[in-house]
Amino acid sequence: MTDTIEQKCLAKGVKLTDQRRTIARVISESKKNYGVSDHPDVDELYKRVSDIDNKISIATVYRTVKLFEESGILMKHDFKDGKARYELNDDHNHLIDIKTGNIIEFTNEEIESIQKKIAEKHGYKLVDSKLELYCVKDKSD
Amino acid sequence: MTDTIEQKCLAKGVKLTDQRRTIARVISESKKNYGVSDHPDVDELYKRVSDIDNKISIATVYRTVKLFEESGILMKHDFKDGKARYELNDDHNHLIDIKTGNIIEFTNEEIESIQKKIAEKHGYKLVDSKLELYCVKDKSD
DNA sequence: CTTTTGCTGAAAAGAATATTCAATATTATT
DNA sequence: AATAATATTGAATATTCTTTTCAGCAAAAG
Image (cartoon, rainbow over all chains, first blue to last red; front, top):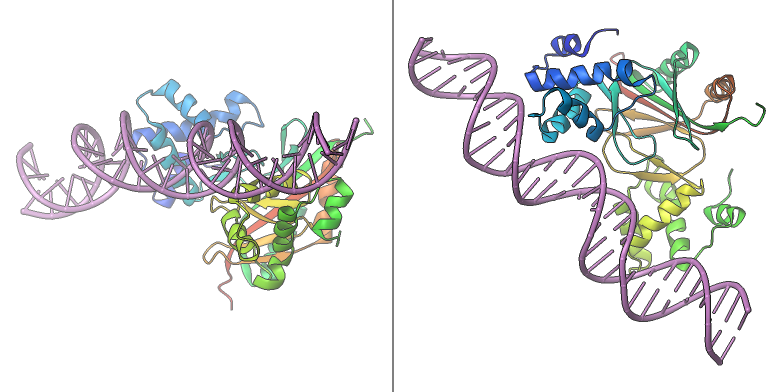
């Protein structure tokens, strides 16, 4: 689960070209460089990618995030603002401040285990999940 | 929580015109008429609305679902297929079969209570949440 | 009843994403 | 290594979904 995108591509048989490797690198490093709650949309990814290689087209960025998403490497989010946002699919959840748009990431084993049980109860196997908590700052602070 | 859309609009001060009432009715009745897992997109809503009143424009459908969503009456979903889908905001969750697209609805009090606790732990109050389980049929059946 | 405000339909505009196509790069086959 | 087959890319165009503009109509306020 702590594999790099490159390792995940190898494991899933997704071919990595120079462009894809650059895009993968930008996504991998987005947290490191831009803070914990960084969820770049395609346009933002394109900007960051262009800083490294300005020959890469936005069409390739779209094609690549789609490819990575379909391979289960990336997770696509909406967060109610209309644009797709991408990040590594490492099974964490999001708490979204609906006033400010600020995003806090969290994981919770208890919820994960209940999710699995619910899937099983319906005759399914859980492959992936998405949990978003839309919140406002608590009065009592 | 079992109010009709009309009652919710009244409670929230959203004015109901004939067109909005028709759209509200179509959304309210979508489950009844089309099955439990019915999550119409705007185009589908427009078709159903047109069957009742073919003078209503698609612009009004877009305006109305946006209005209802912003008032917290409707919930907007994505389900990884790129188009917005709307349904009454009654706090249930979704299990999505990633092979067939079939959707099963469920609620779980245990998860709800953990969600509230997580929000509180971060100094927030939970307003709304969205949980999606992406699954495949279990081999053992 | 007149004025103001808001809603609507039709069309146009806008934004996000997907696709076409010729050029280039990669891989497989001799 | 040379050639043939296949896949990927950039640029431009097309498509899809959604929003906005604007003139006419309806509702509410004065």
